[in-house]
Length: 416
Image 1 (cartoon, rainbow, N blue to C red):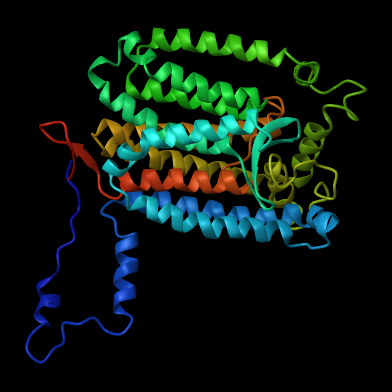
Image 2 (cartoon, rainbow, N blue to C red):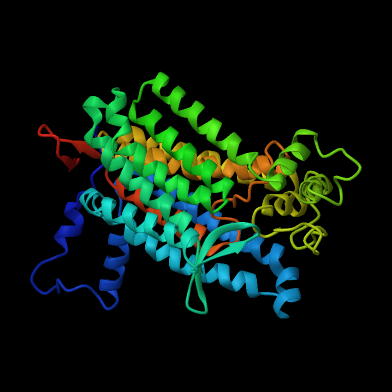
């Protein structure tokens, strides 16, 4: 595929000669370093990078607005939630840019280690005292007094490069069910099973979507995918009916939250999310003027931040968020089409299913299309582990968008 190359013009080269210093001016080294960091040969790189940075900046503004009241209630500081999120963004952006510089061979080399480390962390979360419960889900791990994170987010990140490695090696045999089952089946089953053991049904749904979406884009047979979908749906239904609280939540969602007892019960969060969206109108009540965030809407800065966006910025702001994720999806598709290396195509497809799928699941929950699952809005909701892991995933995609990767005659990935 033809690509654009930058060639130095004769006019620029003509300036070098006797009497002129070839050394860069003061500060030139830093400028060169920045240019190399952001240097790319494709517009897809800048499209995805710009969209991601805009979402992160927009998320910081909305976290500041949505968390100010609860932050003051908890710690007498209005900016506590914003400062934490800004710190995570300050860590995530350099990690994303560093990841964007890594070659394909780096991700292939570290993929097996990454999946083993992620599964081990998730096992420690559900099977040892290191893990602790948040809102009924055993999905957090604490190391020391101040360091805590969500290992299930690292499972997502590890699955991106590990599934890409396995499926890229099986391109000639991808339509045989035995090749899909080993080793993909046992490893993904263990990873998803450990997250399921912690009770995090929302993250399980995203992981299942990632696996199925990856198989689809890798070229698996539809009937094999159908069997996998039926098996996973059966397990999900059994798990949903395993406890009375989950069953009650699903029943309330199916009834449309119209019962007399729903307001003070399981539909409190859903109903207040609807009222926040409805009160915003077209232009919203103004940034910072939400009434729902005054301890009426639980998780206003996290799972239900889209409701605050709709209330403060109105339909215009909500549609803008949707449009940004659509632009991000277009960038993903363009990067997939620009690469011929199976590893790059599968990895980008997996990240696309993860980020875009999670965004629309979160929005569907706020709108009441799905029951409350506890899934954050990527790059916008408060949460350090989710933000950093998502930005590293974008960095992986950017590493393939910087210059399209093609497969040479001997099957080795080469830069065009």
